[in-house]
Structures are given as C-alpha cells and as structure tokens.
Image (tube, rainbow, N blue to C red):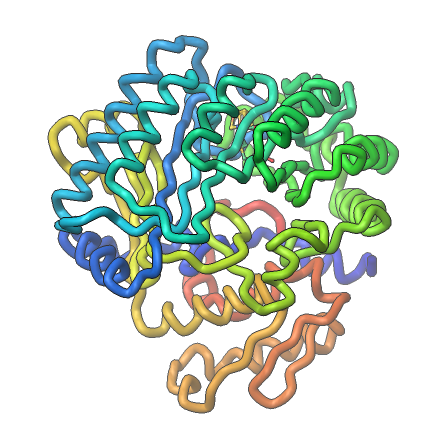
Length: 451
Ligand SMILES: C[S@@+](CC[C@H](N)C(=O)[O-])C[C@H]1O[C@@H](n2cnc3c(N)ncnc32)[C@H](O)[C@@H]1O
Ligand code: SF4
C-alpha cells in the first residue's frame, strides 16, 4: 500500500449504505408521502423485504456502532414484540394491501435478535408471516450473537423457513476480546455454527472487524485461521468505524490503543491474503464469499446489491422496516423510525407510524444514487449522455481526474472503472459523486475515516 496515497485519502467519509447518506437527509416525507412511496413500490415489487430491528443486548461491546439497548431484564422482550406487531398492523391498515404482502426477504437485525426467547421469536414471526406470502425464492436471515444463541432459538427460526444466519465474531484474540468487552471462544462459535448447519441453515456468515484496539498482524492471522477452519460461506471483514463522539462505549479505550491508518490497512491486507488462500473471493468492499455462495455468483452476474443491511445477492424493494431506529427504503424515499426506544413505543401505542425523519429523493439524488450503488457493487459505472443534464454529474469527470492521476480509477468516455489499486479507496471514489457532501462540508464530525 502506497503510504502517500493512504495519507492523502484517509479522511472522514460515508460507507454509502444509502445515497443521500443519513446525515444529509433533508426533505422529510410526511407520513402520507411515505405511505404513498411504499405503496407505489409495492405495486411493481416481485416481493418486498421486511427488516425487523431488535435493539436489546445483554452487555455492551465497547466498539459497537449499532443502535442497541443494553439490559439483562428479559421481561422487555414480549412487550417489544407486541409493539412491533402493532406497528406492522398500522402499516397494513395504511397501505391497504388488502391481501397478503408478497415477501422476498425477511431479516432480523439488531442489537441481538436472539436476545428474545424462542417463544417470543415465534410470536413475532407468526404475527408477521400470517400476513405475508413468501415468494418462491424468498430468503429469511438473522443476525445472532453466538454467546446467547441456543439450539431452541435456531430450531424456532428454522421452523419459519430461516436459512441464512450471521454470527458476530469480531476477533478471537483474548487481549482484543478483553478490551472490547466481548469474550467468546472458538468452541462457542463452532457449536452454534455446526448446530445451525445440522438444523438446515445453508448459508452461514461471520462478522469480523479489523482496526480494533490491540489488534496486530499476528492476532489477525490467528483469528482468520480459526475462522477459515469453520468454513463460513460469507465473511464480512468490516473496517472498525471509530466514532467516539457518537458512541460513548468507544471512549473506553484510547486512540493510542488503535492500529493507525497504515497498520490498519496492513491488517486488512494480511486478512485478505489469508482468506484468498482459503478460497474466499473479495466482494464489493470489506466482504468475502466462497465461490459456491450467491454473493459470488451474483457479483459475476452483475446483480450484487447494497442497502442498509449491507451487501445482498439481489435488489429487493421496497424495504419495510419495523422496530426502533429501523430504516425503510422505497427507492424514491427513505424513512427512519424514532431512535429512542421509549418514544418509538409511545408513538406506536398512540396509533402513529413512528417515523421520525427521512428523505424524499429528488431527480439528482436518484441519478447519483444509481452511480454510487454501481461503484459500491460493480466497481464501475457509466452514464448516458442524456443524464449529463443532471448538473452535478456534468462536473463529476473533472472531480475524478485527481483520483485517475493517482492511479485509482480509469475514465473512458462515459465509463468510470475502479482499478485494483483503487479498491481500498472506494469510499473516496464514491465521494466524487456525492453532491450533497460537496455542497455542504460537514460542520461537525459525522463519519469514520475511509481506510
Ligand atoms: C448488530 S451486530 C451483530 C449481531 C450481534 N449483536 C453480535 O454482536 O453478535 C452487527 C455487526 O456490526 C459490526 N459492527 C458493530 N460496530 C461496529 C463498528 N464500530 N465498526 C465496524 N463494524 C461494527 C459487528 O461486526 C457486528 O457483528
Ligand atoms: S456488537 Fe452486537 S452484541 Fe455487541 S453491543 Fe453491538 S449489537 Fe450488541
């Protein structure tokens, strides 16, 4: 890795799970506008996605950037399930779907969905699936914390057709685990993985993070070796997002404990090298998959997609999001629920759709969204001459010239292709298409560093 490039491009920048990025949302949809956008998207949809956010975790992992509520009080589970089901009923009433909703994807995320007891998951899933018709090749997936996931949880999820499971691993090194307050053994992970496979989960993902406090090249090697031995189908190898001004937990270690830009990149590159030796292929940004996995085949076929849940093998639209802080996407509009649990519950109890903010995309947003998505998923994008009427796009080739001079990409005619040397700077390349970021440089710290 070229050190000068790293110094030049390691700046704060978005991860582009959406465009416009959340801090730049400004045109809030009214509840009616949001419902109309969802209804329109449903009319042309071959199957919607439903995302349910379960915020609870038993203990705080100090690196965590997710929206969570730490509690050991298990009695919060069932009331929360009932609130989510009431929110779903409010949507059905407002959307007037009449019949059952065709369902392409169902994803339980968090927090920790398996904080809920198996019978609570059963009530939740029955309450949702009673009103949906899963389409033929539907995919149901869940994020679990291996430390709190039992065989009964897995069996309850399989009962409803869940076949994809994602396990939070992060790192296996004892020193790293101690400082991030997440002690979990390889044996624990192995047990959940093999039980899940025995029960019929045919796609297993592991989440790892590089850039955590005390990580070294040799600790990453150890973690990757243990991980590869368990042969997950997919691996998310996330860049640690350090945002201590937003996440107080991250103040429990100091920046001196973190690998710096160059060292952090070395961790990723060594991890990638080992994963490639084990037959994994790099997908998009920070993801790997075996050649038998649909993320890989979808990448080859040009069908890879990216949304708030990360990379997915296909574009399922709209996303109806339920639960505190969950973000819905109707392609032409986004909406996020209340981020504070109590406010979310109160609003649902009052019979309100609990959206707190969102964004209606304007014609320029829609064009730029497409290009940023193309870059994040296909490593290239091209524009029609007619699109050049979009004023910002007109200026993009000039903005790309500096990145091209640095050997990160190639522009030929109306096409921009990310070169291998540009992959580590994919977020920076997308930033050249980000009109909203360009027009309004953030006055406060918003994003983690790009590398
Ligand atoms: C909702 S959590 C996963 C499920 C479960 N709560 C667990 O931890 O096992 C989603 C993933 O986000 C990733 N993550 C959380 N905070 C992060 C951060 N600050 N930077 C990068 N990745 C992060 C972790 O890899 C984590 O597994
Ligand atoms: S990483 Fe998972 S278990 Fe840990 S605090 Fe975040 S959401 Fe909870």
